[in-house]
Image (tube, rainbow, N blue to C red; front, side):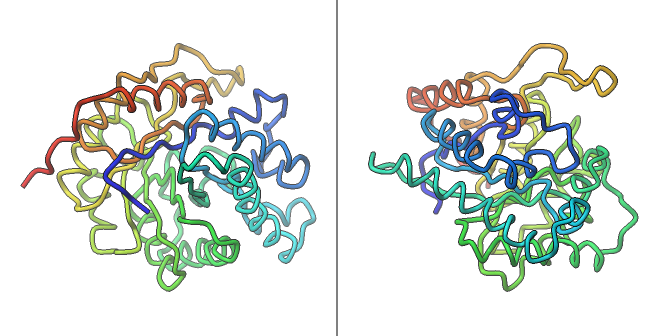
Length: 304
């Protein structure tokens, strides 16, 4: 699917759903609307597509068999909802078709910590073995694949151990994936070197891009340089706005530091797929897309 041109990702799906009036303070987060308001998910995807995004990331980040079981949904029902997350993004793509632009659907696969809904995805190191992590991720990958996404987004991965398990779980599923870590100050959230993190996917042909997401915009540039230098794969980046979440007050604080000018620099440094995560809305993606269209700066040559 990858071309020489930059590919614009969407922004924060949950942020857009909240802006549309939905309370997502729930263990299922945006996945709750797969049952309660699926049409709203379609509308949010459409908003990002119309803003210029070429990839829609599905509302399955925090979806799991265990999470749905806690709501009284059996395994068959949970599988149907996982498939629905892909189908809703595909419906949104069909709704905006006809303008000659290519668009793709990325099935979001969040880390084990996201399912715990306690912030563990920003710490990692859950105490699970490699085998246990593979056993957690593999069934979700298999069910999501049944709906025919164009690729998986193995996203917001906090540590190398979980990344290795997700890469192992991909084997034989038949869908390409990108692998993106959540990082802080040049290391994974578990404190590992980015060189070790990106090396996990270096020899896996099914992983077609590596990078970072759900981090501060300030942490992206060094990560792009590391991924571009250490791998032969395209680099994916989609940070948060740079605002901070106050868990006590349950609100975002500070100002957004996500800018189209930064995105242009990330592209020049080697990033290929560019977008946003939490607190990045369609208007931000529209500015990003316009900035990339206007930019005459070529991507730098890959270091020898």
